[in-house]
Length: 442
Image 1 (tube, rainbow, N blue to C red):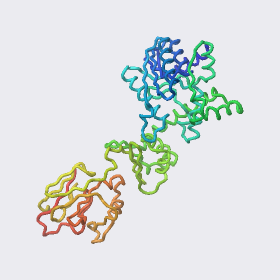
Image 2: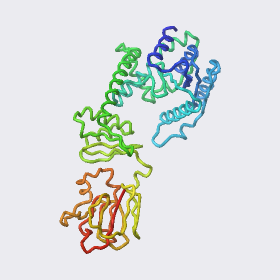
Image 3: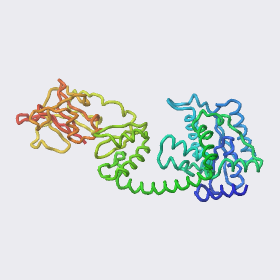
Image 4: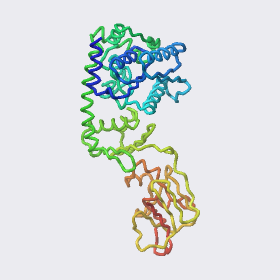
């Protein structure tokens, strides 16, 4: 018993997980690991409460788990929180039962931490769990963070049993007269973790003499490597990543000479902005300009940089077409914060900042986004026509802006100007024009 208690105590100090002054919340299922952890917390004199979520997926067994954890809390003198949920009715599209249960569980835990001023949430993940997590991540494909397995602490979530094996927990429980609940679903091979637990880890232990305890030492080494990697990554981020005034994050790929550094930074930024591994791979190899979308962000890829920006609620909605029935006319849609079209006297100087001057035209005029195949005759090309798309590419207009730029067209849908960029040859201002159309933007 003493070695396990000492291992627990030493790991808490070594990883600086929590202290006697902290208020702790223990997530308890009634299984071996969380039950032993509850007894360890009481033996060490910590201030803790117990929380249990009943997913109601196993009928009487689920009710039995809830009753067991409630009695455990009463026996140890710990405050008890419980909640029953209907997992299947709260699943999101494409979400498995396990994913839904995890989301509901951790959302509730975070509310408890906040509402009751607990400092940390504790779970009973142990060395065997961590080895299984490593193997699962390896099978799915991962980086150093995934290979390192479960972190001892991440934000307010702590895992103080990571260096203790399940066999040690069982030995401690039996010697201490501690009982626990067994989940029958753990005996099936319905889930990947169970298949790893029943087929791979026994093979490692029996045929290769590789116990979970040895993996705990490897995991510690990997966490040290990860710390050094993250330290270097922060320095590289300071050098090659910009935080723009509009809230977007820009990876300056043209400044990075090392492909390895570029891929490392791209992987970290891509994961931070919820892009899949395949999307990130495509971002690193695609030629030209491309857009990618995650659940929360868009990535705008060019040869010079990759820009990550939040997706607004109407991100996928095209620009509406606007009719200019009278002048002046102002809109805040599109790229410019404010775009104004007005009649004005012909100025002496046509080249002015944030302003275009056009020949007069009959109303109504129209503002619309570009369409496939749109062509125009940019002023200065001697009447030659060009695709709007090609013009914007030549002007190095970022791909994420091109569909947010309005074209001004006349009643015949002939393009008069690309607002914010150029006017067309047919609508250039001539000496005989006393009154002109002025487009200005802020």
